[in-house]
Amino acid sequence: MNVVSRLAEQIQQAVAAFEECKTPPALIGGVALAAHEVVRATRDVDFLVDAADADPAGIRRNPDVRAL
Image (tube, rainbow, N blue to C red; front, side):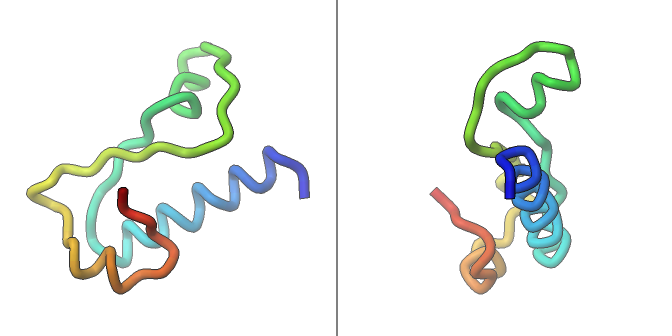
C-alpha cells in the first residue's frame, strides 16, 4: 500500500472513531494545508477537537484512537 493510500485509510479510520465518540473533529496540520495549495511533507494526520465535546472515556474505549 502506498503512503497516500495509507494516509487516506488512516483519515477514514479516525473520522469513524470520532463519529462513534460523537466528537466533531477539525483536520489541522500538514494535510489540512493541502486544501490551501500549500505543500508540506508530513507522515501523520492531525485533528483538533473541542475539549468540551470530547468524551475521554469513549476515546479510551476505542482502540483506533490514540490520545496524546
